[in-house]
Length: 152
Image (cartoon, rainbow, N blue to C red; front, side, top):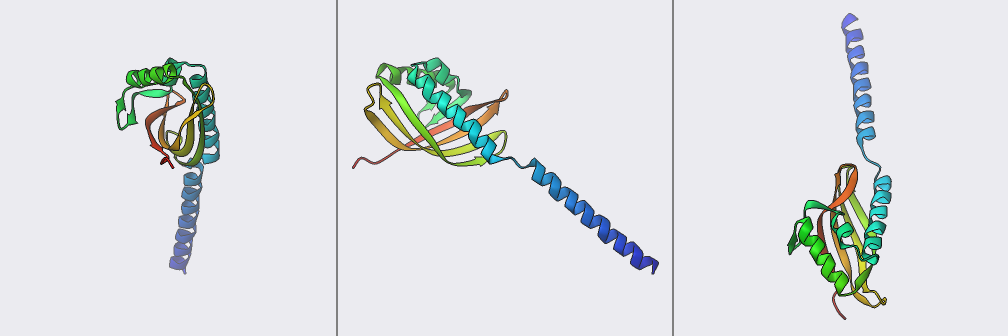
């Protein structure tokens, strides 16, 4: 009888401990809806910096060791690319998140976007993939790549 009580107690405490671990893992999971809103705000800031022709602010949205795959590495070089785009009057953009994966420190975003001249003429549409990294409490782009739509 004593052995039976001991086994029942063991099962009970084991179940309680398992439930406690499940609650801890649930509370550690991130709310992607909240993170998506944060990324949405960063995308609007990106669009505003381009519209305001501010290549330095655009560059600062990237980590120091960021890469625009396949051809540009480092924030300074990315800033120079934005400067050339702005000089070519590409100052319009629109981005929309399709999917977001990750956690509160590193996110991968898949989206669709459009680039346009100052006069509104669209120069490119396509899909993009961004890797966002939290740096000093702010989301910055670690990796950036663009897949242009095929011309019809």
